Amino acid sequence: MVAVLCWIGCQNQPSTNVEQNPTAKTSLAPEPEWSRSAVLYECNVRQFSASGNFAGVRAQLPRLKDLGIDVLWIMPIHPIGIERRKQQPGDEGSPYSVKDYYAVNPDLGTEADFKSLVSEAHALGLKVILDWVPNHTSWDSEWKKTHPEYFTKYKGDFTVPLNERGEPIDDWSDVCDLDYNNPATRKAMIAAMQYWIKQADIDGFRVDMAGLVPNDFWAEARPALDSIKQVYMLSEWQDEPGHFNSCFNANYGWKWKDVTKDIAQGKQNAQSLDTLIRFLDNFYPAGYNQLYFTQNHDENSWNGTETELYGAAADVFNVLAFTWQGAPMIYCGQEDGLSQRLAFFKKDPIQWKSYEKTSFFQKLCDLKHNNRALWNGKHGGKLQKIETDHPKEVYAFTREKDGDRLVVISNLSPKACSVTLKPDGAVVAGVYLSVFEASTVQLTKDMQLNLKPWEYIVLTNK
Image 1 (tube, rainbow, N blue to C red):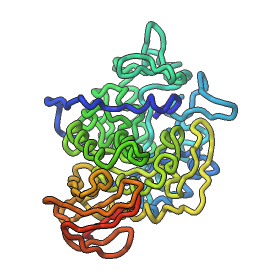
Image 2 (image 1 turned 90 degrees about the vertical axis):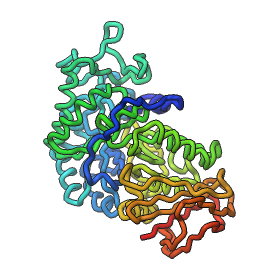
Image 3 (image 1 turned 60 degrees about the vertical axis):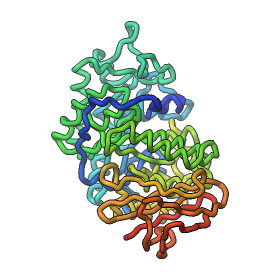
Image 4 (image 1 turned 135 degrees about the vertical axis):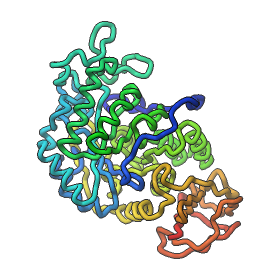
C-alpha cells in the first residue's frame, strides 16, 4: 500500500449492500500447487536488519525457514522518486513511489544481490513474491520522462492517483497516475512484470492498490505472466470479487482485521465474526481465499504495534488468522514480539531480541501444513460454527477435510468464562491432540470448559 498518505484512505471497504454479479464468471484464477497450504511472511527490507539491504535478509533466510513460512513477500525494491517526495531530514522516501520498474534501489543492493536472495530462498524451499505498484509512479519516473503518454490527464494535466470515483487523492501527492485506457501502458506494465519473473525467477506479486487498476487489465496480465511461469498473485484490495476470476489467488482481509481489532478493544464481540463470514461468503465467489493478519507495514507504522492494537488478545487473533478459511501472514518482527512502530519513510531497523514468539508461530505453521482442514481457500475445510452458551464471548468452530479435523475454542473477551459447547450437528466428539499443551483431550458433546481471558484451545485429530 502507498502509505504516503493518511492510512485510513487506503482502507477500501466493501459496502454491505453490494451483491455479486450473478452473470460473473465462477471459475477461479489458476494457482500454483505450492500455495495451497502456504504461510506468508512480509519482509520490510529497509527495516529487517541493521544493514537494511538484501544481504541482511539473506543472512536470516535459514531462521525464516525454521520458523515455518513458505512465501517471502519482499516490499518494493525499486529506486524511490525524489520529486515531490514526502520527507523530513534524513528520510529516504516511500518505497511505493517507484522511479524505475526495471531498476533496484541501490540502498538495498544490486539486481544481482536480489537475484541471489531469490536463489538462496529457493534453495531452502521458500518462494518469493515481489511487491508491485502498478497504479502510479513517482513524478520523476523514467516512464514519465520517456513515455508521458502512459499517464492520466486530469483537467489537461498530469495528476495524483484517482480514486474509484475518478477524483484526485490529494494526499498521494508524491505519485503520478498511470492511464490504463492506453493499450501501450498495459503492454509496458505487463512487460515490466514479466522482466522480474524472467530475470530473477520470482514466484509472483503482491499488488499494491490492485483495485485502482481496471480488472480487465488483470485478466489480460495473468496469462501473460503464467506463460513464463505459473505465479501466485495477491491483491491488496477487497472491493472487487471479480479479482478472483481475472487474476488473483488471494486478496486482503481488511474487514477481518477491522473486526478483530474492534473485538480486542471491546467495540464488537465474538458474534461479529458470524456476521463477517456470512458477508464474505455472500460477496465473493465460492472458493475465495483471503490473507489474514494482525500486523503489516501499514498497520504497524500508522496505527500501532500488535500490543497497542490487540493488547492481551494478540495471540488468540493470530490463532484465528491461521485457522480461519484464508491464508495467514506474519509481519517481520512478530516472531520477536515486535514492540516498535517502524518508521515508514526512513531507515528504522528492527531491534531483534530473543525471538520470543518463534515457538508459537512454528506450532501454527506446522498445523497449517499438516492438517488439510486448514489449507487455504477451497483446499481447506469449510468453517462450521460450534454453538455455545456464551455466544458473545466465545467463538468456537470446527473444520474438516479428507479425514483431518480441527477444533478451535476461543474466549474473545477480557473476562474468564465457564462455557458449555452445544455442537448441534457439528461433529466434534473424539480424542484430539492439544496443539499448545502437547496433551490429549477427550472432547464430548455438552462439554463444559473454563476459559481464561483471551484463552484459546486448538485441537487436531492428527
